[in-house]
Length: 134
Ligand code: DCM
Image (cartoon, rainbow, N blue to C red; front, side, top):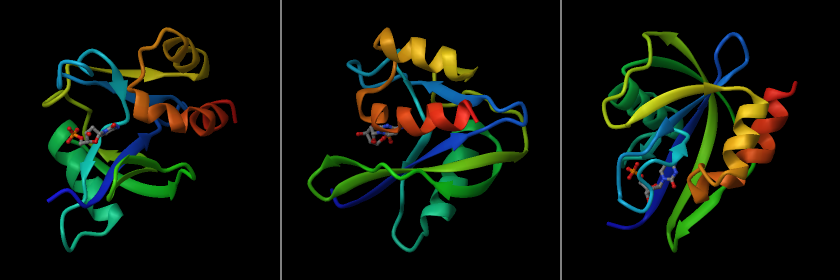
């Protein structure tokens, strides 16, 4: 099965910072930082999939907000979207990621300039920076 959608979460803390997660695999992406998320399963809405994925990956419950405008074609039939979210319960924990980091606009911009962001996720950087600079 190659078709479908990957949904990622732009999780904001009350202080305005954004949560980034450091990938553990595959080797070419390991060490780079992404918005956490995963594949939407059959019968799930985007929002349901994001809540499930963030519970599985980070051990948090989130309230889902408004989608980011940019979407990314991962391959034919597989697209990735991002949705803003806030944590309503739990403290983020690494189960699948190497590390987690809360960033402000300057930190995100510096990480991007250093090539530390997963290439696919760079499509969202303008919108993320705009959110962080609000
Ligand atoms: N992916 C991505 N950026 C994200 C989340 C996922 O580029 N923030 C991509 C990597 C894989 C696919 O989506 O091609 C599935 O992700 P995972 O391996 O995390 O399940």
